[in-house]
Length: 256
Image 1 (cartoon, one colour):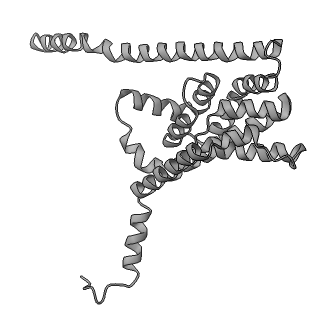
Image 2 (tube, one colour):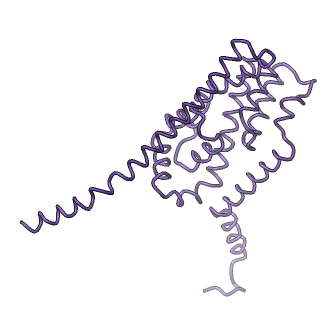
Image 3 (cartoon, helix red, strand yellow):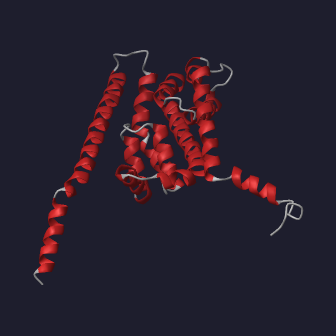
């Protein structure tokens, strides 16, 4: 055994690097980053700058690209997407606003997914216990694309929560980003149209978009309630007959 004098000089640095790169150290870094992002949003309200303080000297395609980049960063920092979608429609109209909003949605989801996968997965996966958590993890891991597509189509799960839950699961990047892009189009388009037509709230386009938003929210609530009820029924059903089956098996063994 090496004494402190003959110990290799790189051993202390190696131990420090291992401690800093450990799963819980990375999870702590993720928590600090998310807390800092949330605090920044509360203090500076970047969504207000996107809606009312857009630089007048930036216009055309460059403005759309810049908005999409800012949209992605803001969603990763927990700025509510509906506000950004309304701003996209108000600033750029329906077509360009929808392109910027969908691109920003995919970018923000990718940033959150990467942070969760690199900094949080190793520490959080051993904590995935309980019937609901295991069921959700299994669904996302085995059927990633269709599960994420359903989550994006029905806006019942918060955007950030879906990103980090997917990151902790074994879902791949490609199905996550593709399902996010496709599944976010209908709801995003409704908000963008509402933002572009906000000046005429009695127009058919505005009324249809608002009706779609309300109906999709109600459908999401119903689907979530039925899923929860089904999971509860599945968990309670086996509890009754299990002892009877055990006793029957014991009785049959005695008569052999």
